[in-house]
Amino acid sequence: MKTLLRFSIVMACIAILTGGINGCSDSGEDPGQTSTTMPVAPSEQQEQPGGVAQPMPPISDAELEKAAAAHLQITEINKNLQQSVQQTEDVKENQKLQIEANKQMVQAAENAGLDYETYNIIMQAVHQNPAMEGLFQQKLRALE
Image (cartoon, rainbow, N blue to C red; front, side, top):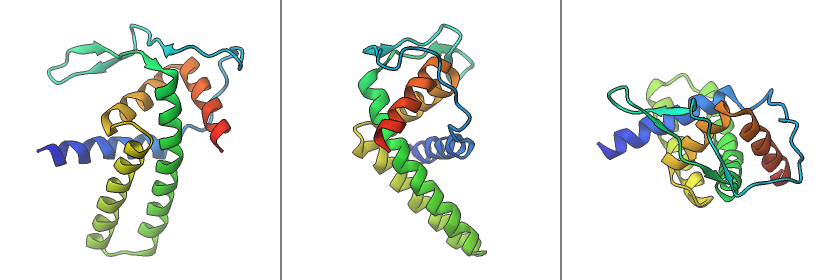
């Protein structure tokens, strides 16, 4: 069951990644100004099983930086996966490639110091909060 949950979360991560972070604009905040946490607006909530919405926890600057580091690795893994999938038409081989890429993506998040659930929560918050997205973009640029 835990493996299925992990696979589902990673697949959601892939869906987010294939949508990309491109097209983000800076929030207009002072680039030198960073806070220790990024508050999430009350309207930005996670949907829990049973339809009950829970507010997202604050995300620290350190967690956002870890997510940016993981994102760079995960984006590369996803890019390599897409190239590999395009080179084969064998469905079973594609599934094997996907499973291996999922393991690598989970490992990339863990190597950056985040568990896969936290990484996915952060990425969801980044997509929902323009100010956080701008800060995330700054962290990505600093790491590149």
